[in-house]
Length: 324
Image: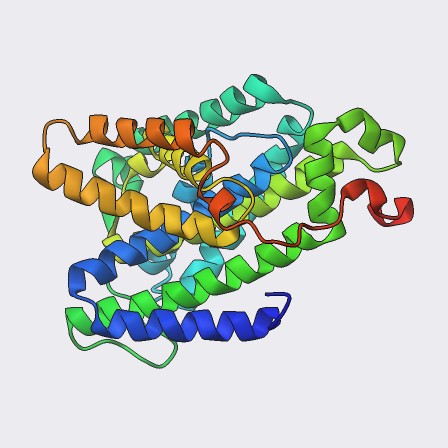
């Protein structure tokens, strides 16, 4: 990215995604669409992990974005995919802003369990709110894409795949730029030694707040995309297993590489798809063995295989004034 520039890399990546989607079978297109959507959510979790925090409640924002898109389609007759995804991200971001002050002072297991508790509260409320479909959820119709409306299911699947790829590339480039920025490197410094960061004059609390809110927005966007791909939303979007899947992805990918997050998501979808097909009664065990092997042989995740030769400058060498 440094050699060719973020814009050139983004355009090349999007062109490659669009070309591959046009030749791949329908089941691969759908699987990759879901992998991209979940990868965006996991990217927010990686953003938190770079600052030393692990959220077990990322499903809360995933669910908020999905319900925001679904209810806008149902109540306001909104049908444009770009509007729905933007609305899902905005609603989740505002929700993150509302609860971030409550969580910013906590670390370690306390932060993880609090986020999990909030996610499960949302799950319980949605299960009992029958105006929102209760435990059955609600169905969504196929959206349009600006001035284009797909005439067939296959055309819609490809259009949504291309749109999801566009959102994915944009999110990946923005996160990569943030990771390489002074603020992004400050997150790594805060993870390693919060006291030294405070001595430098920076605020660890402010860093944690920013990371949490950004992760919430990414979670909402991913949830909206997943809802459009599935055509259905239900309270299980906020269940602890959904949040655990995103933690699984973040551990599998590691925090070094943005590309590794989406490769991990695609790999996980493939493993789950084939293991559920060939081992229908024990596919969860196959996923567990897969994660165990990754932890044993790639403790820093898939990103350690894609680590760039030129490491970013150390946070300690940055000007103190830029960290305030």
